[in-house]
Image (cartoon, rainbow, N blue to C red; front, side, top):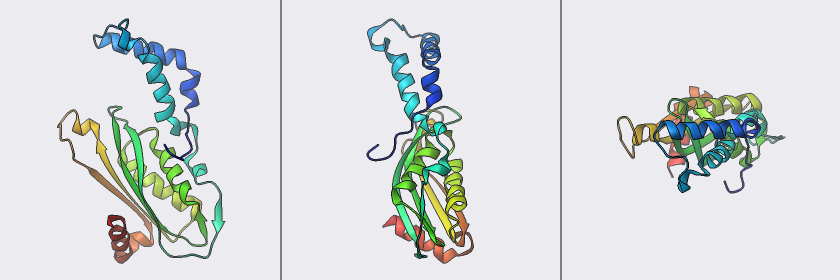
Length: 197
């Protein structure tokens, strides 16, 4: 994940043997031969993957923002193109894309890397894209108390692309606005223009 703190799900670690057992049983129930060479280590690999992809359960997302700083800057701050990976809570299928966060500070700022950590903490759990979008905006509002926050999340959902309606390449875009961004159409337009550059 290149510089972003790795969160590890300690519940998965604690229940490693049980999870491996159940993954093996699922493989058997779908008709696989769990004794064949390619599947011998699959239950252990899946369990290690779960430690990582569900690492968000082991952290309070509010703490991901870390220490904030007093700063008189009260103009728009944007961190865009934060890549995320999550798991759809309806099918446990991956979805992924980019998060764009903008906020207008009111005396407190967060370290820029902390916004990427917030995205990781919120997305690395069973989720829906709409909730990821709202949670990021709400946590930014709660922790930093800015004049306004705007979050745009783009996502490609394998539960829609690889199964069901099978529409690969389709993207879902969700948006959350708080404070000045909710009230001011020009502020929203400025943010949207800047993330498209």
